Amino acid sequence: MSSRRAFLSSASLAAAGLALTPLCACSHDAVAGAASSPAAARPARNAARAGGALATRIIPSTGEAIPVIGAGTSGSYEVAIASADFARLQETIRVFFEGGATVFDTSPNYGTADAVLGALLADGDWRERCFLATKIAADDRAAMEAQWAESLRRLQTDRVELLQVHNLRAMDIAWPYAQALKADGATRYIGFTHYLESGHAALVEAMRAHRPDFVQVNYSVNAPQAARTVLPVAQDLGVAVLVNRAFDDGRLFPQVADRTLPAWAEAVEVTSWAQMFLKFAISHPAVTAVIPATGRPDRQADQLRAGSGPMLSEAQQAELVAMFA
Ligand SMILES: NC(=O)c1ccc[n+]([C@@H]2O[C@H](COP(=O)([O-])OP(=O)(O)OC[C@H]3O[C@@H](n4cnc5c(N)ncnc54)[C@H](OP(=O)(O)O)[C@@H]3O)[C@@H](O)[C@H]2O)c1
Image (cartoon, rainbow, N blue to C red; front, side, top):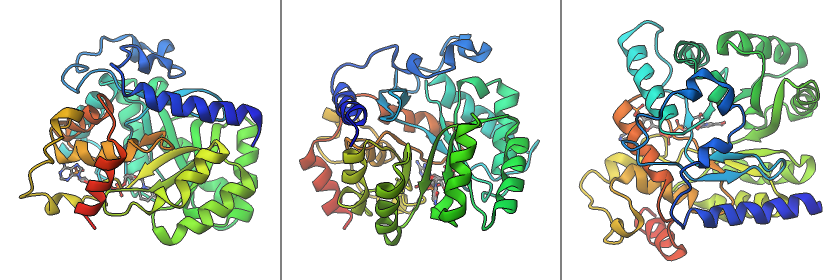
């Protein structure tokens, strides 16, 4: 491990520890680009409604800080533009950015989601505040180049903050292409993703081989395997981690319909199961941000509340895992 990455990895742990203290009201100001945007100049009207300032974590490869609660577009943003669903997303994304969040994860594989996200970012003038992550998901260089050009067109931008190889697809072609785009300044960070435990061994192998800026992996109370596989390696190598499927694609909610929160929920400032599932994900010190999907403003505000207050202890995390085993 390089000494810079070792130092920044320690800094990341320190940042995780910061979340245990009263939150810095200016934590989201550390996000690059925020100050230059007209949208950024607007008062954060919903900050209090969404639970106050979000904790941030450090990206080990640069030291840049990003908020611990982000969003994904799979399913929830796959709507028709100019529909009632789109109008609801305009409100959802306003709650997201005005609550201090910045990280959006999308993919050319998610139906209309890229075009919808691009339209929403343009409509609300949110692009400069957004840490925009998308993916390459194709099998040969020509298809990747065409897909990248189309992604930029749909997202209404000329660069992204993070470009990920979707599910490690065609890595031998996709990774050199991602590296070339990073060298050209088309993306600030590169990485790769998976969403199943069966992909963890390959993720670990690729992390050791390629030393990405980011890895994206599934991690939830009912699928906690990453804590034994990908997360310790990410910590060791100084790789930032985005967590997908923190709600197991929504399947966790029916399981808690009749369950009350643990007695200690109040002590960790958790008032809903959605907050509990997200707080579980960000309580692992290797995790940089979690990217839950929702297309509803009320759920968006609720999710942001998980990004402040105390993290869960190891005993509390273990209790949740046992509860959903
Ligand atoms: N291979 C990959 O790279 C990969 C794979 C999977 C996911 N991802 C990324 O990770 C993101 C998150 O994963 P995910 O979308 O699969 O699943 P998720 O975040 O675990 O769950 C999202 C689902 O939960 C529902 N939901 C949210 N809050 C709720 C609540 N309070 N009560 C009931 N339902 C609720 C959402 O529906 P509503 O919209 O109706 O709220 C949505 O259907 C994706 O959007 C994507 O960006 C990447």
